[in-house]
Length: 276
Image 1 (cartoon, rainbow, N blue to C red):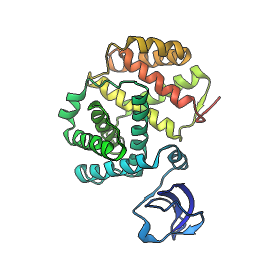
Image 2 (spheres, rainbow, N blue to C red; image 1 turned 90 degrees about the vertical axis):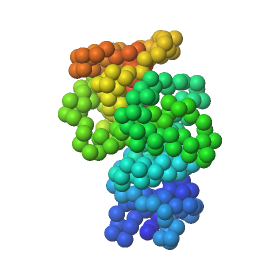
Image 3 (tube, rainbow, N blue to C red; image 1 turned 120 degrees about the vertical axis):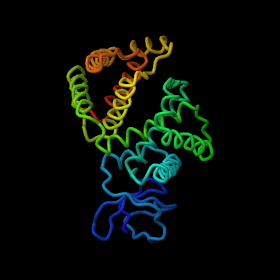
Image 4 (cartoon, rainbow, N blue to C red; image 1 turned 45 degrees about the vertical axis):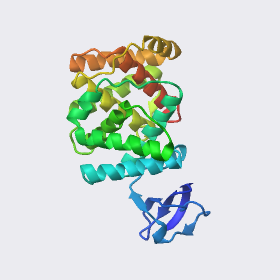
């Protein structure tokens, strides 16, 4: 196994004997300067078919969070069946790091659907609770119990998107949502980017909450007003998307759901993933 690029001290991009690219996990695999032949006994995990964009995104995620995410997905595979691969590890790691940022900035993710998640997805919720224990043990981060629900929903979404349960209506809504964003902001979104897939993940969560009448809805009006003032153009996009979703599901999105949508749109379009 030839290392061609080090992502961090414990993760490297390699070429196997068939010249296929593979992301490799292992203690200290990224210490030496590439290219070099890494002993197979130092390799703990290998992941094929990882997109170039996702490989680049790994540089932005702390190694210790990647390690914890890998451990959580191992638990999920044991409990739920061997169905979660590299993408699940990397997107969950990004979710954890973003959750840590929210906590540091005192942005509270209120999930009134906690009881519904534990009842409707008990296995995934079990993994969510175990994830919080592992995160606290390995990273020293004490998340609120709502984050167990958020991680459970992350797993549910991954299962749905990889088993064909996502219906045609959801796909159409995503396409129409992206069309609104590109039209109103005069941008072209890179559909292969990590941030685009993160936004799509958020929207699938949102659709699920809308369908089950479990929308996030608290009295966080001051933050909602502040974010709308800070991002007026994106807020207009979110209003159009709110109308689109409202017509599709015959429900009205809460202000807090719109607020989180604004934040996710801004995060996606404030990076290099959009051509202006």
